Length: 599
Image (cartoon, rainbow, N blue to C red; front, top):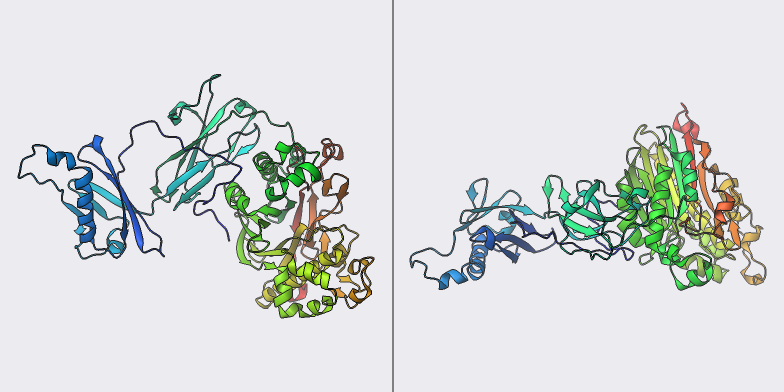
C-alpha cells in the first residue's frame, strides 16, 4: 500500500518552486543531526559550533558507522582548529591557554569510551559536548529538501504543495499559508518574510476563494515526525491568484453528494481522469482535442479542477483510471490523504507512465490485501488460464495484441470498520481502447471475472463472503460482448465480437463459450454517454455491483448535455477529463443467513 508517512520524493513537472530565504541571520542549530539509512555504512553528521554566538560555523562530516568515537573526536578537533581557532593561533594568546576544546559523546550522563563505534554512540538522546556547548543528537531529523507550490492558480480551487523531503510524516508536518499583495511594478523580494503575510490557512491543501483574487500565496512548512521537528522551509507563488472559469458543471452534481454516507451505505466513484501523459501532446492539442483551449489541457490547469470535483463527491471509495505515475505520488496521494483517504496504484507494466488507483476513506474501511494482476502475465503464466491461451492461439494477431497490452486488474480487499463481517472485493480496470479490438476487450473481461472468482473462492475457504464491486473504463458499449458477459454471465461462441468482418477463415475463433456465476449489475444504469470527444460519444464506464449484496440507493445524475457541448466536447475549460465521473450510493442488503446459505 502506498502511503504518505514519508515525504514524497519527487517534483511534478507542472509545479515550479523557489525556496525563499528567511532574510535574517541564521539561527544556531541547537542540536547535532545524524543521517543514515539501515542499508548504509556511512553517516552524515552536521551541527553548528563557534567560540562566540556570532561566529557560528557549520560542520558537515561523512563518517563510517564502524568508526570509533576516538577517531571521530580527533577528526572533529582538526575541523574546529581549522574553522574556529585559525585566527586565534595567530593572535597573542597566552602560551598555556588550551586552544582545542574538550569533546565527548554521552548518553544519560555516561560518557562513551573512545573504542565505542559511531553506530552505537550517535543515537537519539545522546549528547555531543564541545567544551561547554551541549548538542543533543537527533537521528534522521525531518528535513525538506525542496518545497513547491504552483506559480499561479485560480480562485475557487485547491492549491496543493509538493514536498520533497526525508524522514517526515505528512500527518505531523505543519503547513501554514499566508497571502500578500504586491504593488504594481514592485519586484518580489528574495528576502521576504512570512511575517509580512496575512495568515489564511493551516492545512496541507489551501482552498482559494474569490476573496483571494489579486493576492499571492506564501507557504511555510515545518517538517515533523511525532515530536521531532526539522528546519522550516518556505515557498512563494510567482503570480497573483486569477479569477476562475466560473461555476463548473460538476458543482451542480455536488448538490447530490453534499454529505458523507452513513455506515450501511457506500458511495462509489469510477472516473477516467485523463492522464497528463496523454492530455498535453501535439496529437491531442492539434487533432484529438483541437476544440479545447491548449492551456486547459495542461496539468497545472486540470489538477485543481480534478481535485475540486473529487472532493465534492464525498465518496467512500474511488476507482480512478489513467492515473499518472508521477501525479499519483506528487498530488493525488497527499491531496486525498489530507482529507482522510488512503490509496494504492497498479501500473500497466514496469515502465508504464500510467495505471489505475483505488482510494478509500480510512474512517470507514481498513485495507486487507492486494490481489492485483497484470492480465497478459496471467494469460501467459497462470495454468488456470491455459485453456484460454490454447483457444486463441490460432489467431496470432489477437494473441500478440492481448499478450502485449498492459491492461491490469487492480483488486484490493477492504473490511468495513463499523461491521468487520462486511468485506469488499474492490476491482478496477481499463480495457484495451482500439475500436476494432472487441475480442481483446472481451477476453480481458473474462480474465478479470475469472480472477475475481478465484479471489472470492480463496476468502470463502477462510469463512469470508466477499462482495464484489467492479469498476472501470471498459471501452465497451452496453451492446458489446463485454457488458453481456459481465451482466448476463455468459457469452456464446457465435458472438460477433469474436470474429471481425474480413478476418481470415483459418484465424476464426470457434470454441469460445464462457460463463461465470456472479450476479453483477450496472449500478449507475445506462446514461447516454460517459465519454464525449468530438463526434464520438458513448457509455464506456461502469460500476458493476453484486446484486445479492447491494441495492442502489442513489445515482448522481450526469451533467446537463448543453453544458457538455457548451465548449464543443470534453475536456474543456470546465471539464478536466474527456470522461464523466460515475458516482452512486449503494447499500448493503441485510441478511441473517449463514455464509454457506447466502452463496
